[in-house]
Amino acid sequence: MRLPKLRELREAVTAVLSPRFTTRFPAEPCVVPERYRGKPRFDPDTCVGCGACVNVCPTSALTMVDEPDGAHPLRRITLRYDTCIFCGNCQDNCTTQTGIQLSNEWDLAGLDRRSMTQTHEHELQRCERCGTSIGTKKHLAWLCERLGPLAYANPSLLLAGSEALSNETLSAAPTQAGEVRTSDFARILCPRCRYELNLWL
Image (cartoon, rainbow, N blue to C red; front, side, top):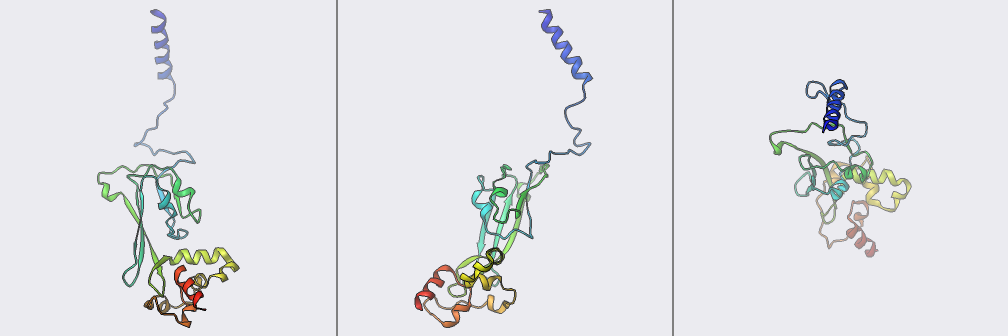
């Protein structure tokens, strides 16, 4: 019975004389490792609002709501970091690779869960013939730039990526879905309307 007691005494003395293993937070800031997975953070410059991060979120911490009606149709992507498990799926599956990334921010405690949300808004592009939402304007412009010369196969992408396109044309009221006009070739159309237009030829 004496040997175990001596072993415990030796461990106690060693623990007292050894440097501490824990941090002094909150008295001192805690330095996290370089590849720490903390709070997801949107980059407004590179995020195109495609919704890929929403599709792969296992806890529905990321949600996407489209509001196509109104003068300025919007897509809202909301992050609820109180339900986020910091798995990194959103970062790994981001279309632009840098649109959303996990930061080093880890101290996310709070008293009101309703305040633990962040909303990211993008302007939607509607089909100028039937009014269906195609995607965000920023996403279409990104696709046009990424495809380069291959974008000439899709007139809608070229028009969406053109900076010379006037706002009046973008916000024009959609025509009837059954009408087919020659001017529709120079409009931003959804795949279904573009298909019907090509059949009309």
